[in-house]
Amino acid sequence: MAYNTLEVTKEGGVCIIKLNRPKALNALCNELTMELAQALAKLEADDKIGCVILTGSEKAFAAGADIKELQEGTFLGMYEHDVFGLYWEAVARFRKPIIAAVAGYALGGGCEIAMMCDFIIAADNAKFGQPEINLGVMPGAGGTQRLTRAVGKAKAMDMCLTGRMMKAPEAHACGLVSRVVALDELMETAMDAAGKIAHQSRPIAMMTKEAVNTAFETTLTQGIHFERRLFQSMFSTEDQKEGMAAFAEKRTPHFTHK
Ligand code: CAA
Image (tube, rainbow, N blue to C red; front, top):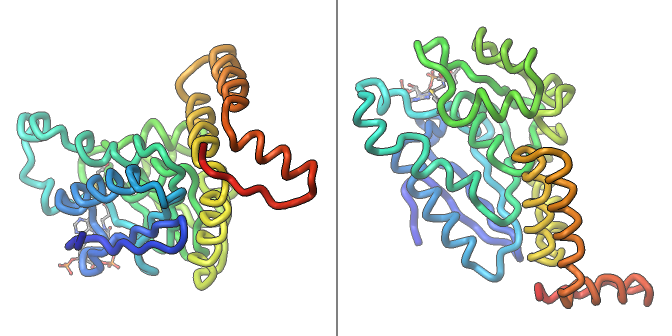
């Protein structure tokens, strides 16, 4: 399927979704988020795909929601169209592993979409921020919640109230991103990580993602209970048998996703 605002390519078990509105620094307009939700729905159903990389251009991952689309918005219009709920949440709800490979600006909704991914690999020119306060609004796609969980109250307040940008080393130091690499190594690093994930057992990788995400939704006792039950359930899979047999036989496991 051809998209107007995305480039979608597949390599082995990995799919790369490139946000592609370069003239608007990948501002997340309605069409783009709708296409992104459509692409993710297809990938979720695609048995060949084990991991997705979401990326942008070297200058901008995404400079936020499309301000020109939003500026004449009304409360009722936004409520009726479930703005930032309907399509955007598709990234957070995506069940397979998804990595954000971020170069350049990841601002406002751009930072929020990156945070909806499972982890962020940043190029050394990446800049993160929640500058919505400069527009007379505040983050509306999870910024006040996910950023706070990722970096803690002090830094989240600083970012959301001042609207300042954070460069890659600071984002790494405070735990917003998992790795920082040179710009020209960004996609190679992301592909290497995604390729490793795609080679694992698909249901086990998906359950692992589910378990980590549960840490943000429950108490520690409930989270540990959920983890233990998932762990026990993995012993009903062929991939558990294969993974442990391969270790004992000193060979590479061949997972069949069953
Ligand atoms: N929405 C719509 N268009 C945008 C945009 C956005 N978020 N960000 C950039 N653009 C457009 C610009 O209007 C400009 O278009 P024209 O050439 O037609 O004028 C083009 O992209 C290039 O942008 P600049 O000329 O501004 O580029 P720059 O290099 O001088 O500055 C920037 C880059 C600092 C990222 C600046 O563009 C900027 O501050 N962008 C807005 C960032 C922002 O406020 N994001 C939050 C949006 S609200 C939101 O996201 C709400 C939410 O919680 C989901």
